[in-house]
Image 1 (cartoon, helix red, strand yellow):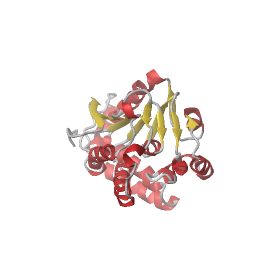
Image 2: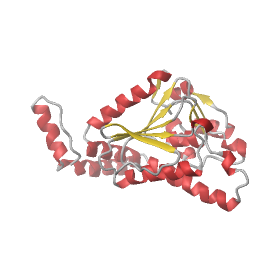
Image 3: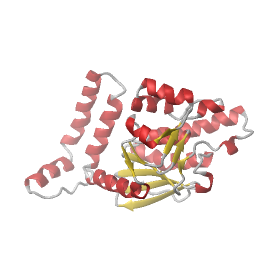
Image 4: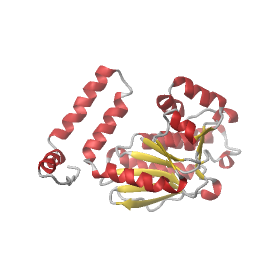
Length: 266
């Protein structure tokens, strides 16, 4: 996969070999999610579902230091017909599902407000690292709607049913510390340490065998959607995919030769 060059509302750059940083790039609008943002997300993450190429880790963050994303662009939505709203929401769903189903691990670096759709897109990522000053919320019910980019499902799986109901039905914001305590966030960082910490993590993930990482992610993700017995069967099938890979042989050789392995994704 090559980095798209026709993006309007995202900034995409290769931070290190195999590591892609995708930034919401509307800081003057607190990185609000417009139709163009979702079309760009679909363009970037769509290929990562089945054809990730050499990419081994992705970081999703927001430009500036005020917001990861403050949620849906309600100014753009002002005056939309019901049909136009539905069509736009379909694009939002497609972009969210592309992140959720990415074969490559995706790490959210939440550097400010993550409300509404912004919070939902962070929840679509595999890991969430957050600035200590970050704030989260799903206020959709206060606007006559409800989370519709996976939030009712991903949040409940992260924090449990009762806490998710409290967050969504009240529409009230919550702090980064609360998100950590409830299990939604993996780690908090000082604002100036967020991206360096996430980049270090991405480098660690990227240094591991990419097929193994993708298969492990797939086993966890899909196994949680089913019963234990079915999940274990899926795990074995995912494991079998790696037995004949060059990376598996390289990992064993490197261990016995007391050197770092050189994984090629083959």
